[in-house]
Image (cartoon, rainbow, N blue to C red; front, top):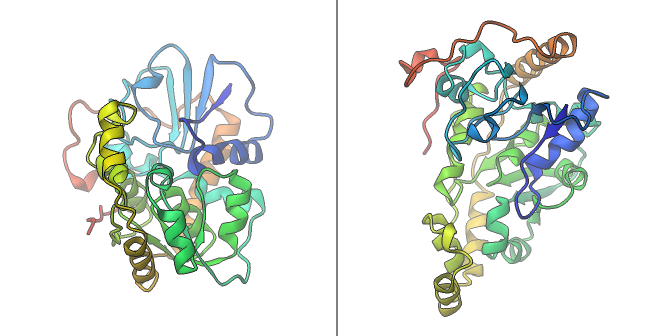
Length: 315
């Protein structure tokens, strides 16, 4: 069984965390046999996995980046990330147990220290296109680059007293470490629904803080024009308009660092972690057996009440 994780042109914290977490949770479980794949952290439940390979799902989610998968006998779904994913795929609400990254601090021996830093983890797509590294430095906020190795990111997060997160897994791991966090509304709209998927299962009502676009590259990317990024038109637009709004970005980070942060309740975190550990125990015993009969719903789910928890509304 191979351990699947998405990787683009650069590495990304949430996806790369798979490479540390699953060997700790399921030692010796994965090998190099492509006939079976483990889908854990990430918005990877979609049609890219359609085909004969057996898919064992342990906490992955649907993100809308690709069409939803055609669930058949090749899918063994132990649990999914949140109630939105369960509803979209026609799964029982009880199958939404949370993101596996909630188990990372305990599984990897990472504990919160007495540090006093304010951390900032932008989305990996924002850090190259914007001026966020310069803005964080100007404000005295610790930049946590999601492209760095996951072990070093975890250590840096553990020294913070507050983390500002445009990257979803910054918030998830911060919550597990019991570090208050502020969700930053992702600049690119397609990255927003997965936040609601996870937060709904944690009983959280998100209050997104808004961050500005700081360069023309960010403006174009947020407008859905990423497909033009390597074109002559993109180069003309980005070189011909140098926004470089570092002062504006720094002021936004400072303002956001003063807002009320989020943190799930201890009881909710314990509940989610306990249920995931129970699902892991069943996965170890019978990895190729679904925990219950899955009958994918046809069309759209009927109503909001099918979710395990009330769905929050983004601000």
